[in-house]
Image: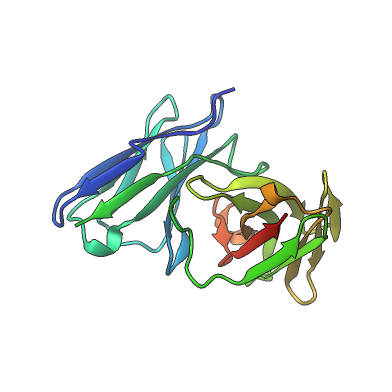
Length: 113
Length: 114
């Protein structure tokens, strides 16, 4: 059974650019969550999608957005990149986001220069 | 590999020892708790979970204890092995989040010497 797949694995962008990260959940999982991990702030919740609907959103600026497709694959987008957006972005999937724990992907390492 | 955290609390043990990692959670309304292990360059890996109607749960070589009175969670690893070296996070799911939001603790780095 394939795990959670995140692409790309590494990314370098320039300040002001935008970036799109992709996440393919475990087959059959309908809930996908995104987290940002930095040495200073640790793991912070960005947003969660279930059946193409955003159910929860963390405390991040509007530059951070996401979406989920009908096959449960999800993308997150960050516009007008800032140096502080450099982080490991983790995607996690769960059958329903309620009764089961989340399985994480290996993340996308974003560096903003 | 990438660093998951600077200045994390660190627990250093010898191979074969038992390890206890502690976590204080913040939300008294949290109903579901999970321990994750994160190795360098990887995402967090599920270890064990516990719901608020339990105070202890055992897995293979791991035990989680929950004390709701003082909002404290602990992870016990028996016969610690070098492969257990990683950063360990506790995570809570508050009831009012609709069960879809994980709030993570800061993490503890476990170093196991052979």
